Image 1 (cartoon, chains in turn red, purple):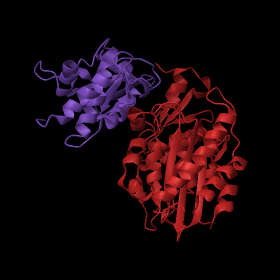
Image 2 (cartoon, rainbow over the protein chains, first blue to last red; image 1 turned 180 degrees about the horizontal axis):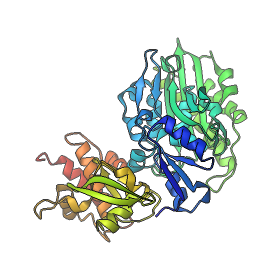
Image 3 (cartoon, helix red, strand yellow; image 1 turned 90 degrees about the vertical axis):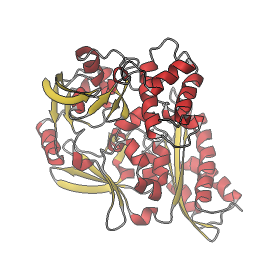
Image 4 (cartoon, one colour; image 1 turned 180 degrees about the vertical axis):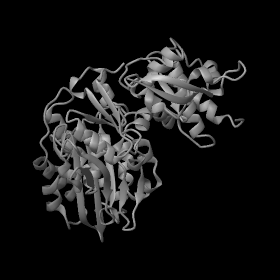
Amino acid sequence: MFNFKSYAKAGSIQEAIQLLEQNPEAHLIAGGTDMLVKLHKGKAQFDHLIDIHDIAELNFITKNNDGDIVIGPLSCFAHVAESALIRKHIPVLSEAILTIGGPQVRNMATIGGNLCNGVPSADSATPLVALNAVVTIEGEDGPRQMPLESFFVGPSRVALKQHEILTAITVTHDNYADYYGHFHKYAMRGAMDISTIGCSAVCKIEDGTLQDLRLAFGVAAPVPIRCKETEAKVRGRKITSELLTDIAKAVTADVRPRTSWRAAKEFRLQIITTLARRVVEQAILNAGGTIQ
Amino acid sequence: MNRMITCTVNGKKKELSVDVRQSLLEVLREQLGLLSVKQGCAVGECGACTVLLDDVPIDACLYLAVWADGRSIRSVEGESRNDKLSRVQQAFVDEGAVQCGICTPGFVMAATSFVEKHKHQKVSRYDIRRGLAGNLCRCTGYETIVTAVQKNLDDDDQ
C-alpha cells in the first residue's frame, strides 16, 4: 500500500485549483508513473495527493480554428503518439514519445505529467521546445500562457505556483506548418531507459537553404534547452556538409552537460556534437532537402 | 480511506471496497485472489503485473485501484475458455516460451493485447520486440516468446 496521508479526487480544473488552495502541501497525481514510484520509495513530500487522473476536460487532442494543435495534459503518451493529428502535423513528437518507457508505461503516463516533473531527460520536452510550444496554466488568478521553454526553471522545478495546474499544450500553426523534424534518443538500452542525451530538430528549407532551424537537447543542461546561438548562426545558410559540421561545432557553446552516474560530461558532449549533426541532417532530409 | 468501486474483472461485474492507497495489483491479488498478477519490480519496469485495462496493457503495480472504477480488467485467469487455453497461451506452450514462469502471465497479457491490436497486419520481429518491451524475462532470451507471438499473428484462423 502506498503511504500517503490524505487523498482528494478532483472532477474538474476548478475543483483541482480549489483543492490546491485548501492544502498548500498537496501534490497533483495524474498518470502516476512517476509519483507512485516516488511514493513506493517512501518520499515523504508526497503525503497529500490531489487526484486529477479522471478530469475529462484535460484529456483531448485537437486542432483549433486557427490550425493550432492543442494537447490536453492528461492525454496519455500512447494516445498522443498514435493520434492521427500529431502524426500528420508534428510527427517528431510521436517519434520522441515512442522512445519513452514501454507500452504499459505509455498507456498510463501523461504528457502533462512528463512536462510538470520538469526533469531534464523528459523525452516529450525537446520536440515541444523545438516546436515553440506554449503552455496554458490556470490558477486562482485565472489562465496565463508562457513558452514551454521558460516553463522549465530548474531541475525538477517548473513555473507552476502551488495553486496552479497545467491545462493545455499548444503548438501554433505557424510553428509547425512547412517545418519538418527528427528526434533521436541516445540511451544505454533500446527501450525502458532514460535518455543519456535526447535531441530534437525542426527545420524549414527553401531552394537549398536552411530558412530556419530549431534545435533542442535534453540532459544537456539543468533543463531541456534550445541552441539559440547555433540557430542564429546557421539561419539562411546553404545546405552543405560544412553547414552540418559548423552546427556540430557551434552547439558546444549552447549546452552545459554535467557528469552523473549515467554518463560523464565529456561523453555527453561527444554525443551532443554527433547528434546535432545527425539529427539536423535527418530533419533536412525529411524536409525533402539534399546535402550538397 | 476506503471507497466503493465497480468494475468488470475477467467478464464478471465486481463491487469492491478499496483503500485509495492500494494499487490495482494489491486489490487483484489480495481481494480477488488473482495470483497470476505478480509484483516484480513495483516501479513499472518489469511488466510482471501487466493486466489489460479496457483491453490496453498497464502495470497494475503503478495504478491506483480507485482508477479502475467503471473499467474492465483482464488477467490471465480469464483468458482460457471451457478449459481450453487462449491462442496466445497455447502458442507460449507450443514454442516453449516459458521457463521459470514468473514473467509469463504478464507476457501473455501484453502479447494478447499486441495480437488483438495487430490482427491481419504485417509486423516484423522487431515490432513484436518493441510491443513487448515493457516486459522482462530473465530466462528465455525472448526468442521463443517473440516466435510465439509471430506464429499467433501468422495464423489466419482467428
